[in-house]
Length: 487
Image (tube, rainbow, N blue to C red; front, side, top):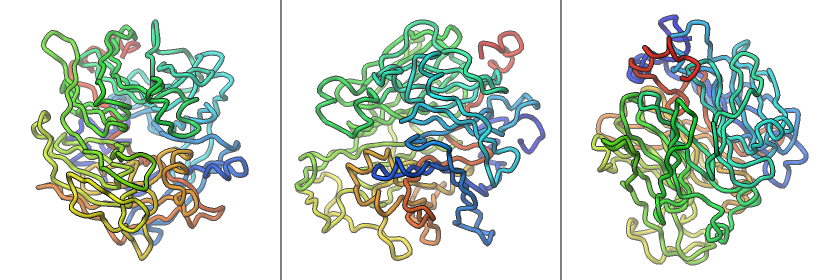
């Protein structure tokens, strides 16, 4: 519950930024590496991140799931700051969709936040038969108390960008959100009722990405390069924005946190670019490229041109900085977005990657670096893989990082990561002028887990975070009394 005793979350992004407590624990799904996935299940780890606790940097609890081969990926909440005005709502269930099994778990984190338990399971057969969807991905709570989950494909594993609605009390699968045709591709989404808009992104056909990355699938059109603009009230697809050859694979999408800001950013993985999307005066939405990470000419890698592969982005709650990870190159970047059309690089830190010196890849041409970096070590141990999922503290001073992308891609790009396990790291952030530095005193090594190494993925705080909470404008909240079912 919020500090003021209302509903979950905070009254505004700046309320969370200025008054939110320091994070005490985080929830992180742990994925079994491909070679072992049939022998043991994924699980949800609860990790202490409170430096005043004797359990600092320790896994406090592991909730083992009843099935194998789920591939829990992204998680979300049953309630967030969009429900802040409703004291009957509580952020007490963590929703965990599974990319491989198409299963959805509702996890009880309210009874004992230190020891989550399974509350309900929505089996894949129901997702397939009722929604005609598969590969559920992003979860967002809605202001009307319901839960919305995007999908990446249909029930047969081909590309389809539809959405599932869950009842916020019973967690029953109720219906599809879209009223009419689905998007061609699906992945992430963010809604903005102030402008009656939702924008979604797309990865590719599950049958294409599940086995691993094949460049030929890009040529065959099995990967996406468009944004999909939806009428939020009518649940209809209204516009498709083709980002062109510099916008391949738009994944994580973020509106600015200010609920009246008609703009945001999306990271495009394969082209290693960041696009700013925005609303034009005529009501149409458009996008422009504002950041480019140059590819590196290399020898000894799968391709002669190595992209950065931007895999996760987020915006600080004060809307001043954007952060993203280059999973293949191995760095995390911080940009000042005071001028959203001209982001300014103000922080960078290297955490592994594929261009480390002396590891088999030779960089032959690089427009950014003069020499290849050494692989970063922490507590004497090399960081495996590259920086991937990121989560920022409410006050913007601590950036948490995990190193796993998707198990079959991990095995393909970083085979040693599957053997050594992922890591949870912490980056100290300069919020005044910009700057990033690795905290050498913080490490959760998932290579030391009781059952063997696992691949840690997305990071969530019980009280909400920079990528889970959506705020409503005063105009939208005033309209809720009349049209709550549509919000």
